[in-house]
Image (cartoon, rainbow, N blue to C red; front, side, top):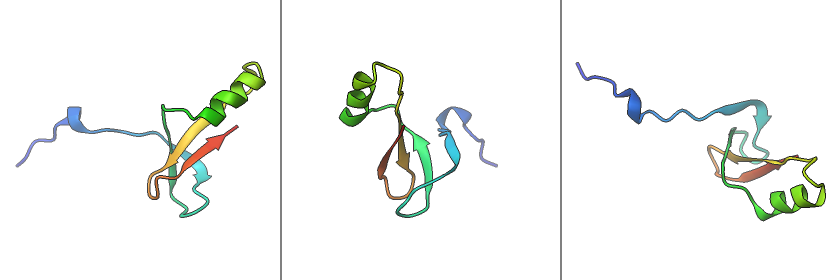
Length: 65
């Protein structure tokens, strides 16, 4: 019987209730930001903190304000 290596399993946190507008897939929070998000944060002086999401299925990027 094969052993399960828990160090190689990558768990991504999905946001429940928010779906992709194109395919209806799950959105996963990404670490890499966009220039639009940085610009919004700069203009609002840090009061608005945009969050970046990516669809698991179609890989489309979404910005949540």
